[in-house]
Image 1 (cartoon, rainbow, N blue to C red):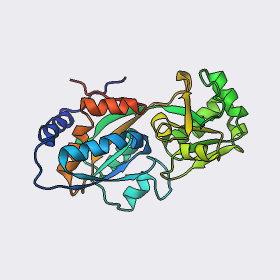
Image 2: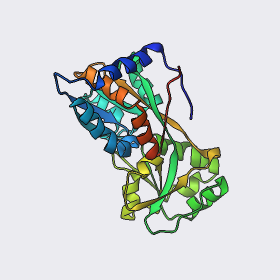
Image 3: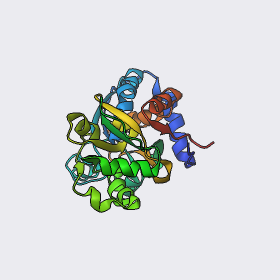
Image 4: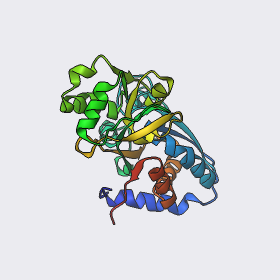
Length: 265
């Protein structure tokens, strides 16, 4: 697990927000959240936990960190969708910060996310434990699904070419656009193999998680969060960030296939 040093002001923000997190709130806020689907499984527990602790209510809109569909987070931001806080892949969020959409001092790394493979429940599980076995499994599959987000961009732009199978995969590739998770396509039988962030695959019932990509071709992304420049509920958004850095929240992130990012002291 990589520990990434943060500026003092980000750590101070977390400490101050946590100090007031469980205090009685005079104003129960509706907190608008934009979030990568990589957090969807974790938020089934973390969302209600935050709401119980604070009395606030989360309104979450899911979408990929990259892409041009209406659900993609960059498009939601560009179109002015209501938001107080946003969870995106770090590189994508940094681009939005440079555009002035988020408060740079509020940016915090939350978790690391890796890419995995899944098949329909009951289907034979291919061996993807080595680079050669993964290559064989991809070539043997009749169809392979991936997202338009960060993992999908890596799969088509880096993984397939690195494995030397870019041309062979063109006819069998299925890109899942918007907020729909790849696991849904696998569950319906639209794709034989699904490749996406491990936490997103684990969020779907009716499929089998096969395993992660081999380390030699793995892509680890950092999920980061920041408060919107025009946030109407800034204090509540900061409290959400603080809540996700608690030990209980970190345990939930791990259970759903993510690796929490610890703050350097």
